[in-house]
Length: 564
Image (cartoon, rainbow, N blue to C red; front, side):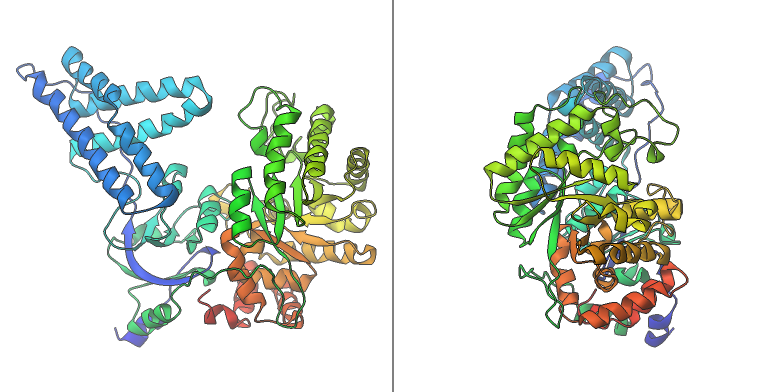
């Protein structure tokens, strides 16, 4: 096959969730380690050599993890070093050796039994110790792999950058991704709002999910990944490789103020999930915080947090953005994120149940205490604090929330647009609410009747769906006569092509992972507002998500110029 034929061969297709054009060699994810048969040593075998093999295998795992940590940096290095220390912990080795000597279990069976027992014990203790259970299982699997002479499970550690190919990644594996070594992710599973997609966006790794045929890509295959187009080219010719190389993904930086080419400001804000994220967002130049998730204060607890504790956490975020906007989302929990102190009963359909603002009907004191804490923290810092409620469906709910915020002196009170009813009736919700912020993940889920966590429905779960874009447009149209701003704080804002469409639909600000700020700015700076309006209309006129994405990308040359 000629180079030209290679370059024009049909690529594998999937859902691009983090744009970028890169070339590299495929490395497949190592398979998971399954439980070995519970077998015993032959009767005439000495147990001491078998027990010694366990210590040797644990030491080898520790050395490999330490070496891998030395080859990377940041969170990945920290996680690898932590796991290396755990591999060197004598407790697991001693427990496994005792099983060899006392019950004559084979080394791999003994390690599996001892590791499982220790992990279960930690999991039962709850809290931080429960988190260590996952690490113990990881070490257990690695030692068993060494004993069986198999590849280590998890993220491979070759001595060169690579494209990681897998079905999906476990949370622990995703957390170990090193953006300096993993050029791109190609997964046959996953969804636009999966943990893999969220972490890939945070790391800025070009990613394509739901790729049919990805399970058949062998290690060593040359690939060009055009994640913005959702395309994976196998064995590409030199022309395509050269094109990918010519736009090798650059680490752009955000200037701190985004405008379209004709000078229309489009504030780019950051999504913050914990106080510690705020400093990084500020350092990345975010013009403020468009979504401050407050669930971190409430999850994994048996009692509601004290007001003083909330105040301290909120102040940490507000302090990172003096004189800039910080939009606080009140507790978004309920049947989908059950908290024992809320009193919400089990439900057959949690996504359609008592969640978000609806929780206040069960536990109004939780919302009152949170609003009081937000107001106290706002008074102590210089941030421009806005507050919004999740899962608002009616104008009456919006009115009630705004009134409640007013009791605590919080005058910038808004609503999230996450369900079609709120989008359709935005003109009524924004009679009293001073702003709206569109959560595109949930809005897509409810508009398309597609569970956002199901990879089988990934093709439906994208904000490129024209029906979803029509709801965004309707929200903006309802807000315009009242002069209310409408932002987007869903992951759709982080897609540079979709960001231009959203601006064209009437969205006035975009909030995203800090890592996406520079790419979105780079694209918006190359288009006029009229271009955005034209692109938005083309997307609305499409008959499906794929067509909408393709027509916009075809008419937005800045994407290819920037390697997006």
